[in-house]
Image 1 (cartoon, rainbow, N blue to C red):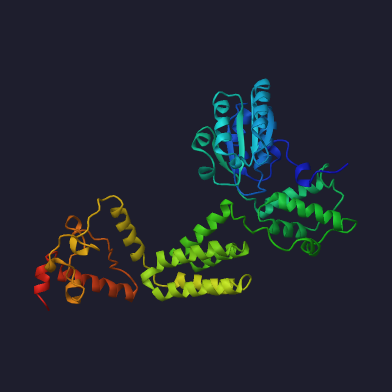
Image 2 (cartoon, helix red, strand yellow; image 1 turned 180 degrees about the vertical axis):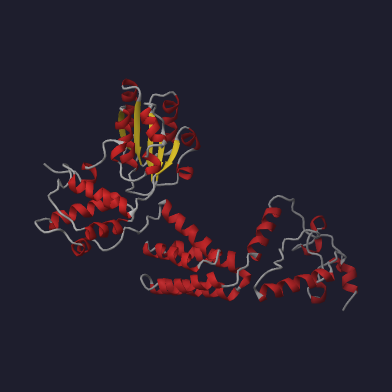
Length: 425
């Protein structure tokens, strides 16, 4: 008889057997109170892969003693959902457990709503995605969102020891040194399923009279389970954290998040985020650093991974420790906000092909002295200022820009073009 993977054979049968996630299954947790009162609720469990979302859902269903139906959103059809609803009507109340619930399209999510609403079933959905992005507002409003967190190293080791002793697991027939179990835990990165797969493979390959060692474990798997799926929330969080770390001048944090993205070999996301960060957060504070970032990205593209990490690392350090300025970004965003809300006007002498304009009122292409004194904003907006002075900037370049701006502002501007033309300086 073919055995199921170890991760499925040793799943907890009740909340009491769940490893870790004390905030969800502890004595004072809402799930525990729900079980004690025999009062079911609908939940969405969200968190990284292998942290126990489905396990907790099944343990909750078993502990509360309610019939449950399981679906996987990746493979289930509309007919499967209709069958689940009919089964729920027979076994009322029922828990509907939906793995990868974020994979349900909007139509299927909407199909579930009336049955959740009228109590035909309670929905237990599991997702690795951010529920505020991946799930409809209607689904979220009818469920409680519970975060399932990565397991700690000690919690993973505890789970491994249970699997070794479990009658449906290794049944105590294989012995592991403590260092070997901790090595598996570190490789797993909080993913229990990943660690159980390594445990079972090690038991199959090296199981015998002698305890399995750390070195034998590392012969099976030496690369930590840290690479990120580009579609998962961890990836987007790392990209976001990289920019915020550079903005906060935290070079150690920025290098860490860069390393995470490099481990996933996601050069496209790194390039885009570094360029945006360079222009948005450093910008005019150090234009040369912005330029060097572009060169570093070009070098990374040319050499590829793994060597690409070197120019990328240089760029991140350069940006973190450089003078920062959001002058350009904040100024253009202020102008964008105004321009998209206000009516459009343009002075006649600025138009490409002005009509019925006298010669003395036409734009003077040969008068640089007039250009810097001419009012370019329409009269209605002449007093608007979008350039945002940075009085406390640490950048000498920004201070020079500020001084030039104030000098031009002090000189003033006019829309009386004929008068400006006559007053030749």
